[in-house]
Length: 374
Ligand SMILES: Nc1nc2c(ncn2[C@@H]2O[C@H](COP(=O)(O)OP(=O)(O)OP(=O)(O)O)[C@@H](O)[C@H]2O)c(=O)[nH]1
Ligand SMILES: [Mg+2]
Image 1 (cartoon, helix red, strand yellow):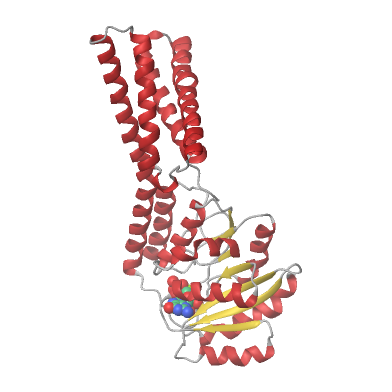
Image 2 (tube, helix red, strand yellow; image 1 turned 45 degrees about the horizontal axis):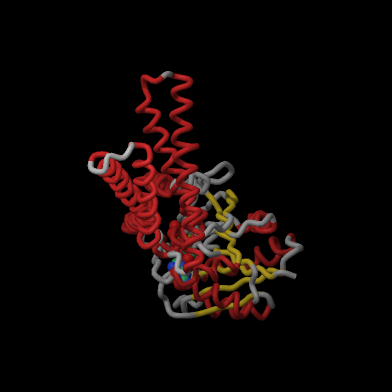
């Protein structure tokens, strides 16, 4: 049977951990038939004796484990514990879950259903239908939490993912193994946001499970609050900039191609007395050649085409993509505009057609010509 591990990071959670373990073992796990469920406590040598308490409980529950280490923050504890889960506990699926009952343990089966439906990364959400943040939070905490997640959704333009900062998740081991090396740099909430964002970038399938969050009644909060929201947004804006950086480079390369096209046209017509149509064909062909090479060595440098055969093959694809874009998409929009609204606004059709052309080209370059190897 497939194995799932509920990873619970703890730092001084003596007041919560026993009750949570008992609820998981006695009330939640019996309802799960198709996974062998295990619990791993990721304890950072809590001075309050959380570790000792867990070790006592391990005598009673054979599927309960502990992984202890130095306190280096939540992200480090998760990385350590996830590595342990895969290597020592043979985990296929790993949960992130707080010890303080913020995360309703009875929702675990709903996460596993999503995993069984083929999703790779299941995000517990407080901000969509059926979920909520604690009712008793002070207004400004509610406000910051809702606003922060809203801004992240907006900046990443991923409206379908509502809760980026939460820590209630089910993750397939493949996702962790793929992203592991990129996670070390993330501290605090950055870990949650960054992990999810990397998974999204790499095309893993994301699902959501709403849950009602409940404030802790026992023990103390460890998260430093004030600066983390600013810190998190800093990551989000910078990561988004890096994603868009490629699009900016693509625009610059295209602009350069446009200049080549225009110059060649002018020179051939003015100096060599060519007809404008063949002159433009030569200009466009040279522009496309320049675009192909500059995109290859700059815009998509990470996925640079290196062998001669694929260089030639991809160049053919690139010419075909460009020709289709100009002839069918850009010219097609101009044709339709002219047909339905008349010649008067032809330049507007040209601009709209060009916008479509850019989107077409960028998508084809990213997803076909310089697609990421998976
Ligand atoms: N191992 C480990 N666990 C941590 C660390 N910091 C926090 N935790 C655990 O991570 C979970 C979330 O921490 P909380 O202190 O509840 O943070 P929070 O939910 O933002 O704050 P509250 O509003 O007080 O609940 C809890 O189970 C903590 O015990 C850490 O540095 N190491
Ligand atoms: Mg908490």
